[in-house]
Amino acid sequence: MSQVRKKQTLVGEVVSTKMEKTVVVKVTRRVLHPTYRKYINQYKKYLAHVSSVEPKMGDVVQITATRPLSARKRWQVSKIIRESVKIG
Image (tube, rainbow, N blue to C red; front, side, top):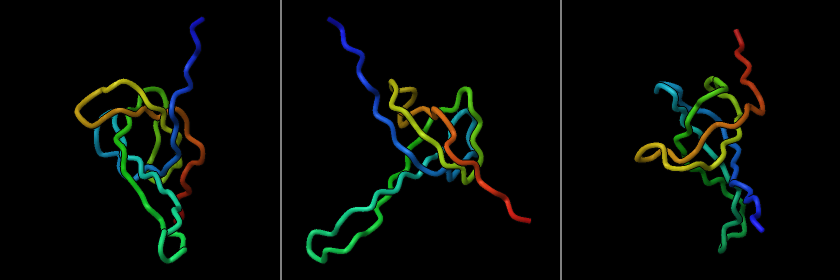
C-alpha cells in the first residue's frame, strides 16, 4: 500500500564552494514574460549539502530535496552532470 514518493530534483551550476560540506548552486529558469512575450532568465540560489561527491566551482550538478539540515539548507548534491573546464 505504501508508495515510493519521487523526490524533487533541480539542475544548476555551483557558484561557491567556500563553506565546509556546503555549496551554493544557482538554478536558472527561462520564463516567458506575460506582457512582452519575451523569454527572460530567472535564477535562484540554493544551499546544498555535499556528502559523497565533491563538486568544484563551475560544475553543473543535480540537487535533490532532503530534510532540513540547517536554517537555509534543504538540498543535497546527488551527482555531477558536467565538470567545469579550466583554461590556462
